Length: 272
Image (cartoon, rainbow, N blue to C red):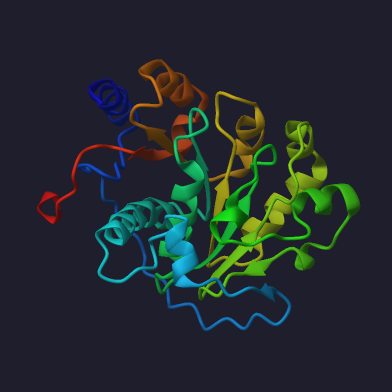
């Protein structure tokens, strides 16, 4: 684990901010304007599939749980993310990792749920990992269509949104997997979609699950459409070299911080 901390510590000094779920956190705290609470949303056109708490817990989705230490970790991460996003008036956060297996999608799902539970934002969780889409699996959902069908078959976007029964949270699944995904992500239709999602609802936070940085160029292709990027790294999986190479691929102005996942360190409330 020491090599992971050294790589992330290097990033913290270079980029100024470091978020660590499962260990100590140090981050700058710029002020940000508090928004008015989001009004109750009526899902009249969005498909609703109610997902039970038990089904979520089976998939290690914990952010919605009450009196949960694990949920508290994501509340802390949420606070750190919102400080930076709100201070800069950003609303599109990309989540990636150096390689597969780091837990980026699980982190993206839990963070999205935690953000949706905060009074000032609605959240759209978008699966852009077209090679290995899995966001829907964490909710136990098997959608018939997804964004791949939007691009290839012109399926209307409003037919793809899914409300999983969590207030202020909507999913936009990827659909079936494809291999030539970077070409799809660079099309004018993708650029128009990114602009539409970002600007249609100013109080909506958009969390985008991207493929790993070192296993395809998909994340790099999409990065210009994101305001910020969160890098998820895993102890025992990602090497120092992989972390440093990944950080080199992220625009310094968009690097929000890093999440250390699968750490053996035991979290204690006294750390905060």
